[in-house]
Amino acid sequence: MSIVTFWNSGREQTGKTLSIAAIATYMAIEHNYKILVVSTGYKDTTLDNCFWEPRKLKKNLGLFGPNTNVALEEGIVGIAKVMRSNKLSPENITNYSKIIFKDRLEILPDFKGDKKEYDELSTLYPEIINLANNYYDLVFVDLDNSIDKSISDVILGNSNLIVVNLSQRLTSINNFMEIREKEPILNSRKTLLLIGRYDRYSKYTIKNISRYMGEKNKVSTIPYNTLFFEACEEAKLPDLLLKIRKVDEEDRNGFFLSEIKRTAENIIYRLQDLAMKM
Image (cartoon, rainbow, N blue to C red; front, side, top):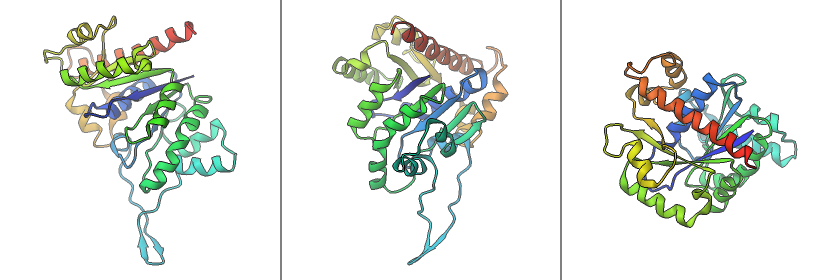
């Protein structure tokens, strides 16, 4: 049972959420793991769009007319109420998550209410994640940059593995190299590097980036793929990965699939390696 947190510096778009969606879905299909993806974002529908169609809120008649801004009793909202009554157990978390593959993949969605309530509820994420780790084989955390740094630091400190998401740009790489010199946790065996939206025809190839950064192992990637990005906008990611799971390397989607597989295997291997050295 391990916590894998996906992190980026917040300075630019790295494809972090789509990467976690691809990896978690692939691992749920190909491996016998029970996985929970925790979205810590605020009104960010990126992960939602990968798996389900937008849901229309029911209009509730309030004192001042129809009210469509009602927070749904799911995700962290529902969990928070149970926590306040001291009745939350690890296995109960599944009651507030959305099931993608039964007993394989569940999503704890981002918060859709107002910002003040989000700031209050976000303090509960470390405890929720730790509880989930007692029930799920893997807890993938999509760590949002809007969360207070003190909370973010606790989540990173509790993580078994941190997947640092970078873009394929020299400035992004250099910025992270500066950050990790100041943050020991990002400069350890607990850290795995991942390039999102990877273009294998760029001069900044996996090999060149790994050499430039002094990485002994090749940096992981999630390549840019048109069908993938379309599926992530149409709630069809599971369908796509099931459809292309048997393609060979000659297929137009072969490289994309092989890199997701390599990234998933890197995560599994690193977790096993770290566990043996504890």
